[in-house]
Length: 406
Image 1 (cartoon, rainbow, N blue to C red):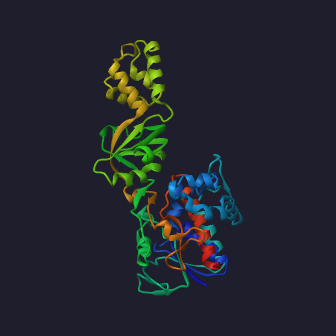
Image 2 (tube, rainbow, N blue to C red):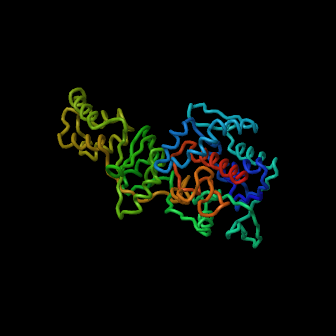
């Protein structure tokens, strides 16, 4: 069985190791001059490759499409991935109780473990090998003009994110060449740009557990966590994890707003009680000094300025300013999205090959027998924290095993 795998990211590496171990003649084609560039750079080079969530909890983080991963996660669970790495001389740990890293804190060690395993079973890795055409019957043409044939092909080419690390739409175009549907793509795990200039004026400040939200009813989307103010808007997990959904929603409206709450756990009722307590006990202390108990001084000053209470003392706070503060801090501040990304700054891509066209039990195309998919090329995106790589590895193992044995 001759299998060609396009892409040497985590999905391609896992597919290569699985297919080669199951007796297939495997060739991995990578268009970049080096293998696994994006994987080796992940997590600042340390590679948070998984986390401690159960498969059910893990899938929930990917939203409505998450159930697609069930067969891959159950067949190749966290325990399998950890055992594979440790058996291949890459011990791992989750020192914080959630995020798994190699003990060496070297992403390159994870990439090397998979390459060594695949190569030990005869897999061949080729760099500078860009596939420009694929036809039914699996004849592949490279940019050099060389033609290759295979019995089966696994598309594990990733998506468009981080173009300087190899992100491209080539894999998506190859999927379309053979009849697959690609959904609209957007930057995900990317910075969110905000029009209001007061946000960028606080670049460098961070909040430990802020909230962002938009939409209403069943279409409401929200998230919370650490939020970092940047020169263009927001970054940090709170913004990054919601960025793909923000990008998709913003693309459909001329002017799109999100709501920013500086402290997720504190409700309108909390701030009503707190400002009443402040009025009674704060006396001649400035309101902005009292508010600074909860936020950096610069932000406390900003919120008071927006509520016309910059120089107000606690015992003298006007009712109108009090109401504005309660609304801003409890309900949130409306902000206009100027953009998300761009894609070459995004860590992941929202959108991809349509999941209904793939058999989740095998990762094989429902349209083209013998064609398999794995990793970011598929229409699945989750938060930061070891989600994308864990999914790519489990899906890659399933695709490689299925391609070699079915």
